Image 1 (tube, each protein chain N blue to C red):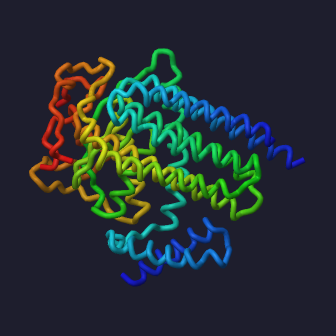
Image 2 (spheres, each protein chain N blue to C red):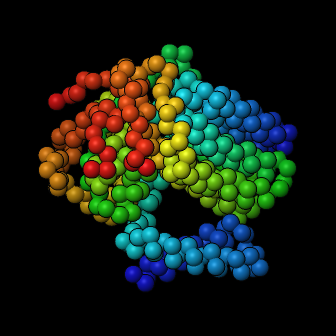
Image 3 (cartoon, rainbow over the protein chains, first blue to last red):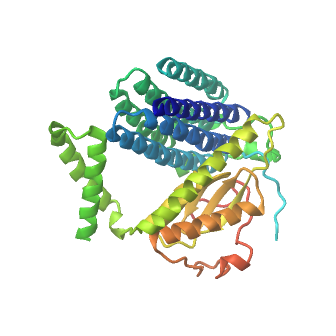
Length: 107
Length: 110
Length: 190
């Protein structure tokens, strides 16, 4: 009985995760500049990975595997933040233009 | 459940394939490098799903390496790769400031 | 100093145990990796001594998860919406956290929370890219900074060295010290 419920929960979480990966790719293709695209990749994809990891952790054979999945997710988060920062920084340093940056400066 | 997970893994692979359109289009080198991040995160997800679906826990170790490799690749890119390709800057014409595109690149700073 | 190294030795050993599963033959390589990791961590400035309070962590984790979910939904909505509603821009933010692990953690968290990522930072000057450039973005950064300060048990420093106008000493009742900038507007690396 509980096994069926768990499977259902895993299915829902994994599907939701896949949806956020789809959204992340949509943003990667549709957003106007490299800075906005970085948002799509780091936010949507990480939530997608988190949901899939959570769903799979419910099915994991033991707690060691669950801890391992959690650790992989945390490392992927740290990696995403690092990659996002260094790509944005060098884009700025190389003068890659940003869309939607207007010249109005609030006092 | 396993069949369902295989379908999800296939869907994620298609997703990575679609992301490759951005890599092909660019326009800036950093846009192409987004692929490293895409491969990293989606690759980890695919491997975790497959580890469960095919009952092969060693794939989780591979997922771990994927997560870390994305960082190494990106650092290598900004330190070594960009200087030579900096000429191909620019965007899809959506920048409000036309002067931005003509800004001289700052190769000496890397 | 030595005590902190010992804590990190234990942390790295735990990480290895999780990664390799408790297999004893794996500890030939694992012990070496753990020692190397601790040495690297100490050598790279881990000595500055981060103290994460458990209560702070229990308060921070739900906040982080909640914000991550909202950030993902927000970006997904914008990416899939036919009109692609975006109003991107850069703002400047003066970091009040002391130099060290807390500041690094803060800068990295910005990149994972809704609509913001840190693009450049030098000393206290942080440049953040916003997906929607509005006053709320700066407020979110202040909330996050306060949470990080509580997590690490450090105080926000509002004094502003280096000729910049001082930011408000009480972040709650004044506008945050941010301004819009164009990318590449100012000289990099001084």
